[in-house]
Image (cartoon, protein in one colour):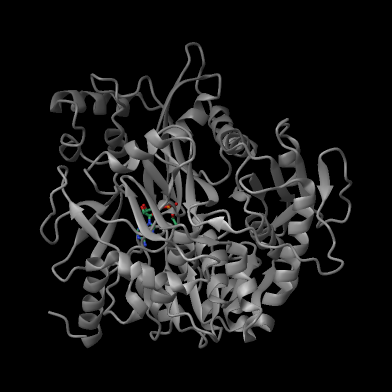
Length: 625
Ligand code: WT7
Protein backbone atom coordinates (compact mmCIF):
# COMPACT_ATOMS: atom_id res chain seq x y z
CA UNK A 1 0.00 0.00 0.00
CA UNK A 2 2.84 2.40 0.80
CA UNK A 3 5.59 3.02 -1.68
CA UNK A 4 7.82 4.91 0.69
CA UNK A 5 9.97 2.73 2.94
CA UNK A 6 10.05 5.48 5.57
CA UNK A 7 6.32 5.29 6.05
CA UNK A 8 6.52 1.67 7.11
CA UNK A 9 9.25 2.59 9.54
CA UNK A 10 7.09 5.40 10.83
CA UNK A 11 4.06 3.15 11.25
CA UNK A 12 6.18 0.75 13.29
CA UNK A 13 7.38 3.58 15.47
CA UNK A 14 3.87 4.95 15.78
CA UNK A 15 2.43 1.59 16.78
CA UNK A 16 5.14 1.20 19.37
CA UNK A 17 4.26 4.62 20.83
CA UNK A 18 0.58 3.78 21.09
CA UNK A 19 1.13 0.34 22.57
CA UNK A 20 3.63 1.63 25.11
CA UNK A 21 2.19 5.04 25.71
CA UNK A 22 3.68 5.74 29.13
CA UNK A 23 7.14 4.37 28.35
CA UNK A 24 7.14 6.29 25.14
CA UNK A 25 6.34 9.61 26.78
CA UNK A 26 8.66 8.92 29.71
CA UNK A 27 11.48 8.68 27.20
CA UNK A 28 10.36 11.82 25.34
CA UNK A 29 10.25 13.74 28.61
CA UNK A 30 14.05 13.86 28.51
CA UNK A 31 13.79 16.47 25.80
CA UNK A 32 13.62 19.07 28.57
CA UNK A 33 15.63 19.45 31.80
CA UNK A 34 13.82 18.71 35.09
CA UNK A 35 14.83 19.80 38.58
CA UNK A 36 13.26 16.67 39.94
CA UNK A 37 12.26 13.59 37.96
CA UNK A 38 8.59 12.65 38.04
CA UNK A 39 7.33 9.67 40.05
CA UNK A 40 4.46 8.78 37.79
CA UNK A 41 4.20 9.30 34.03
CA UNK A 42 0.41 9.54 33.89
CA UNK A 43 -2.32 9.85 36.46
CA UNK A 44 -5.67 9.07 34.94
CA UNK A 45 -8.60 10.55 36.77
CA UNK A 46 -10.73 10.67 33.65
CA UNK A 47 -11.32 13.20 32.17
CA UNK A 48 -8.66 14.93 34.27
CA UNK A 49 -5.20 13.75 33.36
CA UNK A 50 -1.92 14.62 35.02
CA UNK A 51 1.40 14.11 33.29
CA UNK A 52 4.79 13.53 34.91
CA UNK A 53 3.38 13.73 38.40
CA UNK A 54 5.91 14.63 41.06
CA UNK A 55 8.24 16.25 38.56
CA UNK A 56 9.58 19.73 39.25
CA UNK A 57 10.77 22.21 36.65
CA UNK A 58 10.63 25.84 35.55
CA UNK A 59 9.73 26.91 32.03
CA UNK A 60 12.07 29.88 32.03
CA UNK A 61 14.94 27.57 33.02
CA UNK A 62 13.93 25.19 30.23
CA UNK A 63 13.89 28.02 27.69
CA UNK A 64 16.97 29.93 28.85
CA UNK A 65 19.21 28.75 31.71
CA UNK A 66 19.76 25.28 30.27
CA UNK A 67 21.43 26.77 27.19
CA UNK A 68 23.94 28.90 29.03
CA UNK A 69 26.30 26.00 29.63
CA UNK A 70 26.35 25.17 25.93
CA UNK A 71 27.48 26.84 22.74
CA UNK A 72 23.98 28.18 22.43
CA UNK A 73 24.74 30.80 25.06
CA UNK A 74 25.71 33.29 22.35
CA UNK A 75 23.42 31.90 19.70
CA UNK A 76 20.64 34.17 18.43
CA UNK A 77 17.32 33.38 20.07
CA UNK A 78 15.29 35.98 18.17
CA UNK A 79 15.69 38.29 15.25
CA UNK A 80 12.96 40.91 15.35
CA UNK A 81 11.89 43.50 12.85
CA UNK A 82 8.90 45.83 12.51
CA UNK A 83 7.14 47.83 9.81
CA UNK A 84 9.37 50.82 10.35
CA UNK A 85 12.38 48.68 9.57
CA UNK A 86 13.55 48.79 13.19
CA UNK A 87 15.52 45.69 14.11
CA UNK A 88 16.63 43.90 17.21
CA UNK A 89 18.58 40.72 17.79
CA UNK A 90 18.91 38.88 21.09
CA UNK A 91 21.11 35.95 21.97
CA UNK A 92 20.05 33.35 24.50
CA UNK A 93 22.35 34.97 27.02
CA UNK A 94 20.92 38.45 26.43
CA UNK A 95 17.40 37.15 26.66
CA UNK A 96 18.32 35.43 29.91
CA UNK A 97 19.69 38.70 31.30
CA UNK A 98 16.61 40.64 30.31
CA UNK A 99 14.28 38.03 31.74
CA UNK A 100 16.12 37.97 35.06
CA UNK A 101 16.07 41.74 35.26
CA UNK A 102 12.40 41.98 34.51
CA UNK A 103 11.59 39.07 36.86
CA UNK A 104 13.24 41.00 39.65
CA UNK A 105 11.13 44.01 38.81
CA UNK A 106 7.94 41.93 38.85
CA UNK A 107 9.01 40.24 42.06
CA UNK A 108 9.46 43.65 43.69
CA UNK A 109 5.96 44.61 42.60
CA UNK A 110 4.73 41.53 44.44
CA UNK A 111 4.21 39.01 41.65
CA UNK A 112 4.49 35.51 43.11
CA UNK A 113 3.79 31.86 42.38
CA UNK A 114 0.20 31.26 41.27
CA UNK A 115 -0.64 34.90 40.48
CA UNK A 116 -2.22 35.56 37.10
CA UNK A 117 -0.56 38.29 35.01
CA UNK A 118 -2.37 39.61 31.96
CA UNK A 119 -0.15 40.50 29.01
CA UNK A 120 -1.50 42.84 26.32
CA UNK A 121 1.44 43.48 24.05
CA UNK A 122 2.42 43.52 20.41
CA UNK A 123 4.86 41.03 18.95
CA UNK A 124 8.10 42.46 20.31
CA UNK A 125 10.96 40.73 22.10
CA UNK A 126 9.89 42.33 25.37
CA UNK A 127 6.52 40.56 25.13
CA UNK A 128 8.44 37.28 25.21
CA UNK A 129 10.58 38.66 28.06
CA UNK A 130 7.32 39.37 29.90
CA UNK A 131 5.99 35.83 29.41
CA UNK A 132 9.22 34.17 30.52
CA UNK A 133 9.64 36.51 33.51
CA UNK A 134 6.16 35.70 34.73
CA UNK A 135 6.74 31.96 34.56
CA UNK A 136 10.22 32.30 36.10
CA UNK A 137 8.40 33.37 39.27
CA UNK A 138 5.91 30.51 39.01
CA UNK A 139 3.18 32.98 38.11
CA UNK A 140 0.73 32.27 35.27
CA UNK A 141 0.36 34.41 32.19
CA UNK A 142 -2.77 35.24 30.31
CA UNK A 143 -1.83 36.78 26.99
CA UNK A 144 -4.64 38.73 25.34
CA UNK A 145 -4.22 39.36 21.61
CA UNK A 146 -3.51 43.05 21.01
CA UNK A 147 -6.35 43.18 18.46
CA UNK A 148 -8.91 42.45 21.17
CA UNK A 149 -10.86 45.26 22.75
CA UNK A 150 -11.47 46.55 26.24
CA UNK A 151 -14.43 44.28 26.95
CA UNK A 152 -12.50 41.19 25.98
CA UNK A 153 -9.81 42.21 28.48
CA UNK A 154 -12.36 42.97 31.18
CA UNK A 155 -14.01 39.58 30.80
CA UNK A 156 -10.67 37.85 31.13
CA UNK A 157 -9.65 39.80 34.22
CA UNK A 158 -12.94 38.97 35.84
CA UNK A 159 -12.57 35.27 35.12
CA UNK A 160 -8.85 34.82 35.75
CA UNK A 161 -8.57 37.22 38.72
CA UNK A 162 -5.47 38.71 37.13
CA UNK A 163 -3.62 40.99 39.56
CA UNK A 164 -1.15 42.61 37.18
CA UNK A 165 -1.15 43.84 33.61
CA UNK A 166 1.86 44.20 31.34
CA UNK A 167 1.30 46.32 28.26
CA UNK A 168 2.98 48.70 25.82
CA UNK A 169 2.17 52.22 24.77
CA UNK A 170 1.38 51.22 21.18
CA UNK A 171 2.03 49.02 18.21
CA UNK A 172 2.07 49.71 14.46
CA UNK A 173 -0.29 48.42 11.82
CA UNK A 174 -0.12 49.46 8.17
CA UNK A 175 1.90 52.55 8.94
CA UNK A 176 -0.41 53.70 11.69
CA UNK A 177 0.25 53.86 15.38
CA UNK A 178 -2.25 51.71 17.26
CA UNK A 179 -2.65 52.83 20.83
CA UNK A 180 -2.75 49.98 23.36
CA UNK A 181 -2.35 51.92 26.57
CA UNK A 182 -5.53 53.91 26.00
CA UNK A 183 -7.45 50.61 25.80
CA UNK A 184 -6.01 49.57 29.15
CA UNK A 185 -6.73 52.99 30.63
CA UNK A 186 -10.42 52.52 29.98
CA UNK A 187 -10.32 49.60 32.35
CA UNK A 188 -10.62 50.48 35.94
CA UNK A 189 -10.52 47.33 37.98
CA UNK A 190 -9.70 47.63 41.66
CA UNK A 191 -8.20 44.18 41.89
CA UNK A 192 -5.42 45.14 39.47
CA UNK A 193 -2.41 46.03 41.61
CA UNK A 194 -0.06 47.34 38.96
CA UNK A 195 0.16 48.01 35.25
CA UNK A 196 3.62 47.83 33.75
CA UNK A 197 3.98 49.84 30.56
CA UNK A 198 6.64 49.40 27.91
CA UNK A 199 7.24 52.96 26.82
CA UNK A 200 7.83 52.94 23.07
CA UNK A 201 6.97 56.56 22.49
CA UNK A 202 9.12 58.15 25.17
CA UNK A 203 6.34 60.22 26.68
CA UNK A 204 4.75 57.81 29.13
CA UNK A 205 4.41 59.22 32.67
CA UNK A 206 4.19 57.01 35.73
CA UNK A 207 1.06 57.62 37.72
CA UNK A 208 -0.75 55.64 40.42
CA UNK A 209 -0.77 51.97 39.49
CA UNK A 210 0.95 52.67 36.19
CA UNK A 211 4.67 51.93 36.30
CA UNK A 212 7.26 52.08 33.58
CA UNK A 213 9.03 49.02 32.20
CA UNK A 214 12.53 49.28 33.71
CA UNK A 215 15.58 50.03 31.61
CA UNK A 216 18.17 47.26 31.90
CA UNK A 217 21.07 48.33 34.09
CA UNK A 218 23.02 45.38 35.37
CA UNK A 219 22.76 41.65 35.76
CA UNK A 220 20.60 40.41 38.61
CA UNK A 221 19.87 36.76 39.18
CA UNK A 222 16.40 35.60 40.09
CA UNK A 223 16.33 31.89 40.85
CA UNK A 224 13.69 30.15 38.73
CA UNK A 225 10.92 28.95 41.05
CA UNK A 226 10.61 25.15 40.80
CA UNK A 227 6.98 24.29 40.09
CA UNK A 228 5.14 20.97 39.88
CA UNK A 229 4.75 19.49 36.41
CA UNK A 230 1.01 20.13 36.71
CA UNK A 231 1.38 23.74 37.82
CA UNK A 232 -0.44 25.94 35.26
CA UNK A 233 1.98 27.58 32.84
CA UNK A 234 -0.66 29.80 31.32
CA UNK A 235 -4.32 30.34 30.69
CA UNK A 236 -5.42 31.30 27.20
CA UNK A 237 -9.01 32.14 26.29
CA UNK A 238 -10.66 30.67 23.25
CA UNK A 239 -14.16 30.82 21.82
CA UNK A 240 -16.57 27.96 21.79
CA UNK A 241 -20.23 27.28 21.36
CA UNK A 242 -21.41 28.59 24.69
CA UNK A 243 -21.33 32.07 26.11
CA UNK A 244 -18.05 33.61 27.01
CA UNK A 245 -14.63 32.47 25.83
CA UNK A 246 -13.23 29.63 27.93
CA UNK A 247 -9.98 29.91 29.86
CA UNK A 248 -7.92 26.96 28.64
CA UNK A 249 -5.35 25.97 31.26
CA UNK A 250 -2.10 24.30 30.20
CA UNK A 251 0.36 22.47 32.43
CA UNK A 252 4.06 23.17 32.67
CA UNK A 253 5.72 19.73 32.32
CA UNK A 254 3.46 17.88 29.91
CA UNK A 255 2.99 20.95 27.75
CA UNK A 256 6.70 21.70 27.37
CA UNK A 257 7.56 18.08 26.59
CA UNK A 258 4.82 18.00 24.01
CA UNK A 259 5.52 21.24 22.17
CA UNK A 260 9.26 20.62 22.01
CA UNK A 261 8.80 17.04 20.76
CA UNK A 262 6.20 17.91 18.16
CA UNK A 263 8.13 20.85 16.70
CA UNK A 264 11.10 18.60 16.12
CA UNK A 265 9.00 15.76 14.71
CA UNK A 266 7.02 17.84 12.26
CA UNK A 267 9.55 20.38 11.04
CA UNK A 268 12.86 18.65 11.71
CA UNK A 269 14.22 21.93 13.07
CA UNK A 270 17.94 21.78 13.65
CA UNK A 271 20.88 23.72 15.08
CA UNK A 272 21.16 25.79 11.92
CA UNK A 273 17.43 26.55 11.58
CA UNK A 274 16.09 30.06 11.21
CA UNK A 275 12.52 29.34 12.14
CA UNK A 276 9.67 31.71 11.32
CA UNK A 277 6.23 31.03 12.70
CA UNK A 278 4.11 34.00 11.66
CA UNK A 279 1.58 33.72 14.51
CA UNK A 280 1.12 36.37 17.16
CA UNK A 281 1.82 35.52 20.81
CA UNK A 282 -1.87 36.22 21.47
CA UNK A 283 -2.81 32.81 20.05
CA UNK A 284 -1.83 29.28 21.02
CA UNK A 285 0.39 29.00 17.95
CA UNK A 286 2.43 31.90 19.29
CA UNK A 287 2.67 30.37 22.76
CA UNK A 288 3.68 26.91 21.58
CA UNK A 289 5.68 27.57 18.42
CA UNK A 290 6.99 31.13 18.72
CA UNK A 291 7.94 31.02 22.39
CA UNK A 292 8.10 27.70 24.21
CA UNK A 293 9.06 25.02 21.68
CA UNK A 294 11.74 26.99 19.80
CA UNK A 295 13.37 28.19 23.02
CA UNK A 296 13.20 24.78 24.70
CA UNK A 297 14.97 23.33 21.65
CA UNK A 298 17.45 26.22 21.56
CA UNK A 299 16.81 27.22 17.97
CA UNK A 300 16.94 30.64 16.30
CA UNK A 301 13.65 32.31 15.35
CA UNK A 302 12.59 35.35 13.43
CA UNK A 303 9.55 37.42 14.46
CA UNK A 304 7.89 40.31 12.69
CA UNK A 305 5.62 43.02 14.07
CA UNK A 306 3.35 44.27 11.32
CA UNK A 307 0.96 43.45 8.53
CA UNK A 308 2.11 40.83 5.99
CA UNK A 309 1.54 42.98 2.88
CA UNK A 310 2.59 46.38 4.12
CA UNK A 311 4.07 48.57 2.63
CA UNK A 312 3.74 46.21 -0.33
CA UNK A 313 2.98 42.53 -0.95
CA UNK A 314 6.64 41.57 -1.15
CA UNK A 315 7.24 42.27 2.55
CA UNK A 316 7.21 38.71 3.86
CA UNK A 317 9.17 37.31 0.93
CA UNK A 318 11.84 39.97 1.32
CA UNK A 319 12.13 39.00 4.98
CA UNK A 320 12.54 35.32 4.12
CA UNK A 321 15.33 36.31 1.74
CA UNK A 322 16.96 38.74 4.16
CA UNK A 323 16.95 36.47 7.22
CA UNK A 324 17.49 33.27 5.24
CA UNK A 325 14.51 31.60 6.84
CA UNK A 326 14.76 27.80 6.72
CA UNK A 327 11.32 26.76 8.03
CA UNK A 328 8.31 28.93 7.43
CA UNK A 329 5.01 28.24 9.22
CA UNK A 330 1.93 30.27 8.37
CA UNK A 331 -1.82 30.15 7.72
CA UNK A 332 -3.96 29.49 4.63
CA UNK A 333 -5.62 32.89 5.14
CA UNK A 334 -2.32 34.72 4.72
CA UNK A 335 -1.49 32.64 1.66
CA UNK A 336 -4.87 33.30 0.07
CA UNK A 337 -4.29 37.00 0.51
CA UNK A 338 -0.91 36.80 -1.24
CA UNK A 339 -2.39 34.74 -4.07
CA UNK A 340 -4.47 37.73 -5.09
CA UNK A 341 -1.37 39.80 -5.83
CA UNK A 342 0.88 39.68 -8.85
CA UNK A 343 3.28 36.75 -8.68
CA UNK A 344 6.21 39.05 -9.31
CA UNK A 345 6.20 40.06 -5.64
CA UNK A 346 7.14 36.50 -4.80
CA UNK A 347 9.30 35.60 -7.77
CA UNK A 348 11.54 38.65 -7.36
CA UNK A 349 12.95 37.10 -4.20
CA UNK A 350 15.52 34.44 -3.57
CA UNK A 351 13.75 31.97 -1.30
CA UNK A 352 16.32 29.21 -1.66
CA UNK A 353 17.04 29.13 2.09
CA UNK A 354 13.64 27.48 2.69
CA UNK A 355 13.58 23.79 3.59
CA UNK A 356 10.12 23.27 5.08
CA UNK A 357 6.79 25.03 4.86
CA UNK A 358 3.91 24.72 7.27
CA UNK A 359 0.22 25.53 7.51
CA UNK A 360 -2.20 25.85 10.42
CA UNK A 361 -5.55 27.19 11.56
CA UNK A 362 -7.96 25.95 8.92
CA UNK A 363 -8.06 23.41 6.14
CA UNK A 364 -5.65 24.30 3.33
CA UNK A 365 -7.40 23.89 0.01
CA UNK A 366 -5.47 22.13 -2.77
CA UNK A 367 -5.15 25.31 -4.90
CA UNK A 368 -3.55 27.15 -2.03
CA UNK A 369 -1.34 24.15 -1.28
CA UNK A 370 -0.12 24.06 -4.90
CA UNK A 371 0.54 27.79 -4.92
CA UNK A 372 2.51 27.56 -1.67
CA UNK A 373 4.42 24.51 -2.86
CA UNK A 374 5.37 25.84 -6.28
CA UNK A 375 5.88 29.55 -5.69
CA UNK A 376 7.17 29.76 -2.15
CA UNK A 377 8.74 26.32 -1.75
CA UNK A 378 9.92 26.33 -5.40
CA UNK A 379 8.74 22.71 -5.59
CA UNK A 380 11.35 21.46 -3.18
CA UNK A 381 9.91 22.00 0.31
CA UNK A 382 7.45 19.67 1.99
CA UNK A 383 4.29 21.36 3.29
CA UNK A 384 3.62 20.39 6.86
CA UNK A 385 -0.10 20.74 7.40
CA UNK A 386 -0.59 20.69 11.17
CA UNK A 387 -3.99 19.99 12.68
CA UNK A 388 -4.39 20.93 16.33
CA UNK A 389 -6.19 23.30 18.69
CA UNK A 390 -5.72 25.67 21.60
CA UNK A 391 -6.85 22.78 23.79
CA UNK A 392 -4.40 20.20 22.40
CA UNK A 393 -1.36 22.39 23.15
CA UNK A 394 0.57 21.22 20.11
CA UNK A 395 0.35 19.46 16.74
CA UNK A 396 -1.81 16.31 16.72
CA UNK A 397 -1.91 15.36 13.06
CA UNK A 398 1.05 16.37 10.91
CA UNK A 399 3.58 14.60 8.70
CA UNK A 400 6.38 13.16 10.81
CA UNK A 401 9.71 14.75 9.78
CA UNK A 402 8.35 15.33 6.30
CA UNK A 403 9.10 11.79 5.20
CA UNK A 404 5.59 10.86 4.25
CA UNK A 405 4.21 11.17 0.77
CA UNK A 406 2.25 14.39 1.10
CA UNK A 407 -1.20 14.98 -0.32
CA UNK A 408 -2.56 18.46 -0.82
CA UNK A 409 -5.40 19.08 1.60
CA UNK A 410 -4.48 16.26 3.97
CA UNK A 411 -2.93 16.81 7.37
CA UNK A 412 -1.63 13.23 6.90
CA UNK A 413 -1.05 10.84 9.83
CA UNK A 414 -1.22 11.41 13.58
CA UNK A 415 2.03 12.12 15.39
CA UNK A 416 3.52 9.45 17.68
CA UNK A 417 1.54 8.84 20.85
CA UNK A 418 -1.61 10.41 19.43
CA UNK A 419 -4.51 8.03 18.85
CA UNK A 420 -7.17 9.59 16.65
CA UNK A 421 -10.20 8.16 14.92
CA UNK A 422 -13.22 9.24 12.90
CA UNK A 423 -16.54 8.19 14.43
CA UNK A 424 -20.26 8.47 13.83
CA UNK A 425 -22.88 10.09 16.07
CA UNK A 426 -22.77 7.05 18.39
CA UNK A 427 -19.01 7.02 18.65
CA UNK A 428 -18.47 3.98 16.40
CA UNK A 429 -15.39 3.99 14.16
CA UNK A 430 -16.30 4.77 10.60
CA UNK A 431 -14.98 2.98 7.52
CA UNK A 432 -12.52 4.83 5.26
CA UNK A 433 -13.69 7.83 3.25
CA UNK A 434 -16.74 8.46 5.40
CA UNK A 435 -17.27 11.85 6.96
CA UNK A 436 -17.60 11.85 10.73
CA UNK A 437 -16.33 13.43 13.92
CA UNK A 438 -12.65 13.36 14.68
CA UNK A 439 -11.89 12.11 18.21
CA UNK A 440 -8.80 11.44 20.30
CA UNK A 441 -8.83 8.11 22.08
CA UNK A 442 -5.92 8.35 24.47
CA UNK A 443 -4.37 11.15 26.53
CA UNK A 444 -1.28 13.07 25.38
CA UNK A 445 1.03 15.32 27.44
CA UNK A 446 0.10 18.56 25.65
CA UNK A 447 -3.59 18.24 26.48
CA UNK A 448 -5.19 21.05 28.44
CA UNK A 449 -5.66 20.48 32.15
CA UNK A 450 -9.13 21.95 32.07
CA UNK A 451 -11.15 25.14 31.80
CA UNK A 452 -10.33 27.71 34.45
CA UNK A 453 -12.98 27.73 37.19
CA UNK A 454 -15.25 25.40 35.28
CA UNK A 455 -14.72 21.65 35.58
CA UNK A 456 -18.31 21.00 34.58
CA UNK A 457 -18.00 22.84 31.32
CA UNK A 458 -14.73 21.04 30.61
CA UNK A 459 -16.49 17.70 31.01
CA UNK A 460 -19.51 18.78 29.04
CA UNK A 461 -17.80 20.42 26.07
CA UNK A 462 -15.01 17.93 25.45
CA UNK A 463 -15.89 14.64 27.10
CA UNK A 464 -19.65 14.20 27.09
CA UNK A 465 -20.43 13.71 23.41
CA UNK A 466 -18.61 10.38 23.35
CA UNK A 467 -17.62 8.10 26.16
CA UNK A 468 -13.92 8.22 27.03
CA UNK A 469 -13.03 10.13 23.88
CA UNK A 470 -11.87 13.70 23.55
CA UNK A 471 -14.18 15.63 21.21
CA UNK A 472 -12.43 18.46 19.31
CA UNK A 473 -15.53 19.60 17.39
CA UNK A 474 -14.20 19.03 13.86
CA UNK A 475 -15.40 16.92 10.95
CA UNK A 476 -12.91 14.69 9.17
CA UNK A 477 -12.52 11.72 6.89
CA UNK A 478 -9.80 9.13 6.81
CA UNK A 479 -8.62 7.45 3.61
CA UNK A 480 -7.74 3.74 3.26
CA UNK A 481 -4.10 4.54 3.84
CA UNK A 482 -4.86 6.30 7.10
CA UNK A 483 -4.55 9.91 5.95
CA UNK A 484 -6.78 12.43 7.67
CA UNK A 485 -8.51 15.22 5.88
CA UNK A 486 -10.03 17.89 8.11
CA UNK A 487 -13.36 19.26 6.98
CA UNK A 488 -14.05 22.20 9.28
CA UNK A 489 -16.00 22.76 12.46
CA UNK A 490 -18.95 20.59 13.42
CA UNK A 491 -20.18 23.13 15.96
CA UNK A 492 -21.20 26.78 16.15
CA UNK A 493 -17.68 28.10 15.85
CA UNK A 494 -16.80 30.43 12.96
CA UNK A 495 -13.20 30.50 11.78
CA UNK A 496 -12.34 33.99 10.60
CA UNK A 497 -8.80 34.12 9.23
CA UNK A 498 -8.13 31.03 11.30
CA UNK A 499 -9.36 32.66 14.51
CA UNK A 500 -12.14 31.06 16.48
CA UNK A 501 -15.22 33.14 17.07
CA UNK A 502 -18.34 31.73 18.70
CA UNK A 503 -21.68 32.59 17.10
CA UNK A 504 -23.10 33.22 20.55
CA UNK A 505 -20.41 35.77 21.34
CA UNK A 506 -21.12 37.77 18.20
CA UNK A 507 -24.87 37.56 18.76
CA UNK A 508 -24.51 38.82 22.33
CA UNK A 509 -22.43 41.75 21.09
CA UNK A 510 -25.04 42.63 18.44
CA UNK A 511 -27.74 42.52 21.11
CA UNK A 512 -25.90 45.24 22.99
CA UNK A 513 -27.41 47.68 20.49
CA UNK A 514 -30.63 48.87 22.07
CA UNK A 515 -32.49 48.87 18.77
CA UNK A 516 -31.89 45.14 18.20
CA UNK A 517 -34.50 42.60 19.29
CA UNK A 518 -32.92 39.34 18.16
CA UNK A 519 -29.81 38.29 16.29
CA UNK A 520 -28.45 35.15 14.70
CA UNK A 521 -25.14 34.80 12.91
CA UNK A 522 -23.65 32.15 10.66
CA UNK A 523 -20.25 31.64 9.08
CA UNK A 524 -20.14 31.96 5.31
CA UNK A 525 -17.23 31.14 2.99
CA UNK A 526 -14.84 33.97 2.14
CA UNK A 527 -12.16 33.88 -0.52
CA UNK A 528 -9.40 35.17 1.73
CA UNK A 529 -10.44 34.75 5.34
CA UNK A 530 -11.90 31.27 5.02
CA UNK A 531 -15.08 32.34 6.74
CA UNK A 532 -16.73 35.61 7.68
CA UNK A 533 -19.96 36.45 9.48
CA UNK A 534 -23.42 36.92 8.01
CA UNK A 535 -25.90 38.30 10.53
CA UNK A 536 -29.67 38.17 10.65
CA UNK A 537 -31.20 40.79 12.88
CA UNK A 538 -34.72 41.65 13.94
CA UNK A 539 -35.32 45.18 15.15
CA UNK A 540 -37.34 46.36 18.10
CA UNK A 541 -40.82 47.68 17.36
CA UNK A 542 -40.90 51.15 15.93
CA UNK A 543 -37.30 51.08 14.73
CA UNK A 544 -37.04 51.61 11.02
CA UNK A 545 -34.34 50.05 8.92
CA UNK A 546 -31.51 52.17 7.62
CA UNK A 547 -27.90 51.71 6.57
CA UNK A 548 -26.65 53.50 9.63
CA UNK A 549 -27.91 50.70 11.84
CA UNK A 550 -25.59 48.29 10.06
CA UNK A 551 -22.63 50.52 10.83
CA UNK A 552 -23.73 50.75 14.45
CA UNK A 553 -23.92 46.97 14.69
CA UNK A 554 -20.46 46.55 13.21
CA UNK A 555 -19.10 49.26 15.50
CA UNK A 556 -20.55 47.62 18.58
CA UNK A 557 -19.11 44.23 17.74
CA UNK A 558 -15.69 45.82 17.18
CA UNK A 559 -15.95 47.59 20.50
CA UNK A 560 -16.94 44.49 22.43
CA UNK A 561 -14.93 41.75 20.75
CA UNK A 562 -12.47 43.55 18.50
CA UNK A 563 -11.68 43.96 14.81
CA UNK A 564 -11.12 40.20 14.42
CA UNK A 565 -14.82 39.84 13.60
CA UNK A 566 -15.46 40.58 9.93
CA UNK A 567 -18.97 40.75 8.42
CA UNK A 568 -19.98 39.83 4.89
CA UNK A 569 -23.54 41.07 5.29
CA UNK A 570 -26.17 42.08 7.78
CA UNK A 571 -29.79 41.24 6.94
CA UNK A 572 -32.76 42.78 8.70
CA UNK A 573 -35.64 40.31 8.87
CA UNK A 574 -39.12 40.22 10.44
CA UNK A 575 -38.43 37.16 12.50
CA UNK A 576 -35.81 34.48 12.93
CA UNK A 577 -36.61 30.91 11.87
CA UNK A 578 -36.83 28.65 14.91
CA UNK A 579 -37.66 25.04 15.66
CA UNK A 580 -40.47 24.24 18.05
CA UNK A 581 -38.01 23.99 20.91
CA UNK A 582 -36.86 27.50 20.07
CA UNK A 583 -33.52 26.67 18.46
CA UNK A 584 -32.54 29.06 15.70
CA UNK A 585 -32.31 27.24 12.38
CA UNK A 586 -28.81 28.36 11.53
CA UNK A 587 -28.23 25.99 8.68
CA UNK A 588 -31.32 27.36 7.06
CA UNK A 589 -29.96 30.87 7.43
CA UNK A 590 -26.72 29.74 5.87
CA UNK A 591 -28.63 28.30 2.95
CA UNK A 592 -30.39 31.63 2.49
CA UNK A 593 -27.11 33.54 2.38
CA UNK A 594 -25.54 31.07 0.00
CA UNK A 595 -28.61 31.18 -2.21
CA UNK A 596 -29.05 27.43 -1.99
CA UNK A 597 -32.14 25.79 -3.43
CA UNK A 598 -34.88 24.55 -1.16
CA UNK A 599 -34.18 20.99 -2.15
CA UNK A 600 -30.79 21.20 -0.50
CA UNK A 601 -32.03 22.58 2.74
CA UNK A 602 -35.03 20.50 3.66
CA UNK A 603 -32.81 17.94 5.34
CA UNK A 604 -30.69 20.52 7.09
CA UNK A 605 -32.47 21.08 10.36
CA UNK A 606 -32.84 18.05 12.51
CA UNK A 607 -35.53 19.32 14.81
CA UNK A 608 -38.00 20.66 12.25
CA UNK A 609 -40.24 19.07 9.67
CA UNK A 610 -39.67 19.59 5.95
CA UNK A 611 -42.76 21.77 5.78
CA UNK A 612 -41.64 23.97 8.61
CA UNK A 613 -38.22 24.44 7.10
CA UNK A 614 -39.69 25.34 3.71
CA UNK A 615 -42.05 27.82 5.23
CA UNK A 616 -39.37 29.43 7.35
CA UNK A 617 -37.01 29.60 4.39
CA UNK A 618 -39.54 31.44 2.28
CA UNK A 619 -40.40 33.76 5.14
CA UNK A 620 -36.82 34.73 5.78
CA UNK A 621 -36.15 35.29 2.11
CA UNK A 622 -39.26 37.37 1.70
CA UNK A 623 -38.69 39.51 4.73
CA UNK A 624 -35.08 40.48 4.01
CA UNK A 625 -35.01 44.19 3.57
C1 WT7 B 1 -9.40 24.70 15.17
C2 WT7 B 1 -8.61 25.08 16.37
C3 WT7 B 1 -4.08 25.21 16.18
C4 WT7 B 1 -3.63 26.57 16.27
C5 WT7 B 1 -4.43 27.57 15.52
C6 WT7 B 1 -5.91 27.44 15.70
C7 WT7 B 1 -8.98 24.35 12.90
C8 WT7 B 1 -6.49 24.11 12.98
C9 WT7 B 1 -6.10 23.02 11.13
C10 WT7 B 1 -5.62 22.31 9.99
C11 WT7 B 1 -7.83 22.05 9.29
C12 WT7 B 1 -7.49 23.21 11.25
C13 WT7 B 1 -9.84 23.23 13.44
C14 WT7 B 1 -9.52 23.24 14.92
N1 WT7 B 1 -7.70 23.89 12.40
N2 WT7 B 1 -5.52 23.59 12.20
N3 WT7 B 1 -4.31 22.11 9.79
N4 WT7 B 1 -6.53 21.84 9.09
N5 WT7 B 1 -8.35 22.72 10.33
O1 WT7 B 1 -6.24 27.09 16.99
O2 WT7 B 1 -8.09 28.68 17.44
O3 WT7 B 1 -7.79 26.61 18.83
O4 WT7 B 1 -8.61 26.48 16.48
O5 WT7 B 1 -8.77 25.22 14.01
O6 WT7 B 1 -11.18 23.53 13.22
O7 WT7 B 1 -10.51 22.65 15.71
P1 WT7 B 1 -7.70 27.25 17.52
